[in-house]
Structures are given as structure tokens and as C-alpha cells.
Amino acid sequence: MKKRYRLGFYFFICFLFTLLIIPLIFRLSAFSQKKKVVVNHQIITPYYEKKVFQLPEEIKAKRSQTVSINKKIKIPIIMYHYVDYVKDPNDVIRKSLSVNPIFFEQELKTLKEAGYQTYFVKEIPDILDGKINYSTQSAVLTFDDGYEDFYTVVFPILKKYQMKATVYVIYDFIGRKGFMNEDEIKEVTKSGLVELGSHTLDHLYLKFSSESVARRQIFESKKKLEERFGVEVKTFAYPYGAFSQKTVDLVKEAGYIAAVSVIPSMQQSKDDLFYLGRVRPGIFGGKTIVKVIENYQK
Ligand SMILES: [Zn+2]
Image (cartoon, rainbow, N blue to C red; front, side, top):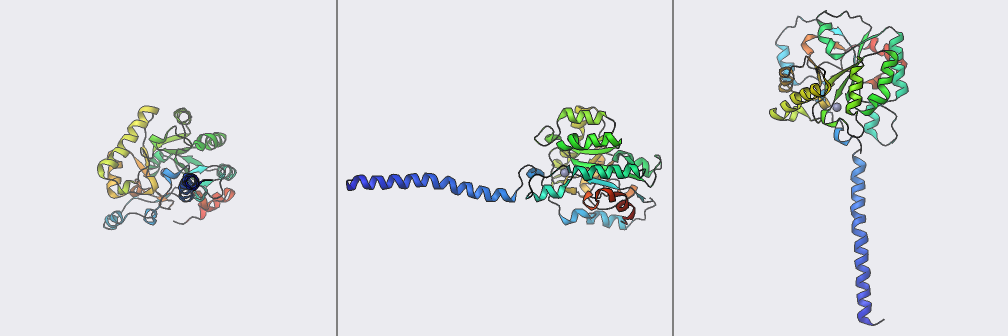
């Protein structure tokens, strides 16, 4: 090969090599980033600040100045997200948010056999007012985010045991992959076993949102759900459990009658109607659910 051609050949090889190597570098870096973020639920990956597990300081301070005459009643509100088998063992977030369907059915069966009654979150104000007969063998089941498995897994089990649940739907996620669609939500709400609650328009961290943004998320999600599904939406769940006094004020102003937090407690009172305590199913091992509820002290 002549020297001139050889040089051209080498350049050509270098060019080909660059073409191959650059996309490979990009792919590798994208892959390493992807490993940190879980694919399906990355938008609603729960970023729980430690603070969300207790009342915000400003609310605590205000409450310490007043003496409450409202009595506390033990009402276990159980918080579920996914009820599904986790296919990817490395998906830590999904694992922490999931309950195995067999476990879930055991929990409902155990509650039923022990004579437990279930209530909607919207019934809690009346329970606390003494307008609804309430026994110590009662519980409230709540499901956050409106995942598809609420329709495919949870709903058939609720029907089987005739137990009630409140589902908190993210309005703009309706019909997205992995979430319930319009027909499914219509069917569950028509059954009489499911209360439809709001979980904002797109799962914002309301505590850090401006007032106008929070207002829109809280007010519009209620209005849109009511118009689309023809039911009154009376209760609200704070995404990530995060709220401030301002958030609570907006939720009240929008016309909700109660809201659920992620503060771990079973003691509910009229003082806490807008940040009712909930417990995660992680602490309940299927058949031991009744024992766990009975022994829960907080
Ligand atoms: Zn959520």
C-alpha cells in the first residue's frame, strides 16, 4: 500500500473507532445512572424526610398552647401502596412499598375472622363525633397512588371479604402505565366498597410548593375527580406525607373533611382530623395483624 493510502486507511480506522466508542461511553454512563433510579415508579419514588413522621413544629407549638377536650379513639388506619409480587429483587423502593398478595389476603381474612369492621376515611369524623357506632375491632384500609394492582389484586379480595377501603388517586396519573384507568376507577367506586380520595394532580411535595401551586393541586384534583367520577371527594392524602400549616389550611378551605398523614399512630382525635396517623403494613405479618393492632401503643 502506498504511504498516502496507508495514512488514509489509518484515519478511516480511527474514525470508525470513534463512532463506536462514543455511543458506548454514553450508554455506560446512562446505565450507571439508571441503576440508582428505579424505572416504573421513579416519578413517585417516596422521598420521606424524617420530619414527615411527626407533626410539623409550627403545628406542635400551636397545639401545646391549648388544652384539648377532644378524646382520642384508637382507629388503626393501615397504609398500603403496592399489593403485588416484586419481580426485580434489586428494586429496593418497590420492595419497601409492596405487600405480597398472599400476605394481604391473610391480613383481611384474619381481620374478618376476628370480627373486625372496616370504615372509610371519610367516616372518621362521624366516628369521632359518636355518630357512627364504632367498636374496638375496627380498622381503616388505605391505598396510596392508585396503582393498577388496586384493581387487579386488592379489589377482588375486598369483594371476597366485603371489606371497605379508601384509595388515594393521583389525578394526572389515571390511565398511565401501572396505574388504574378511568373504567377501573369507575368500577371500584360504584361497588360501594371503595372511597375515592385525592392525592393531588401529580404527586407534588406540597410542603415545599408555593401557595398557588399547592392550591391548584389540592383544589383542582378534588374538582376534577368529582366531575369525572360523579362522587364527592371528601378526604385527602399528602404526597410523601409532607405538609405544613399552610397545606392543612388549603385542604380545609377546599372542602375536604379529613386528611391522612404518615405519622405512625393509631390514636385519632378531632384535633388531628387533617393529619390522621397511619401505620405501614410492613409491621404486620399477615396472620399477626390483629395482635399487632391490639398491642400497638402509640
Ligand atoms: Zn403517594
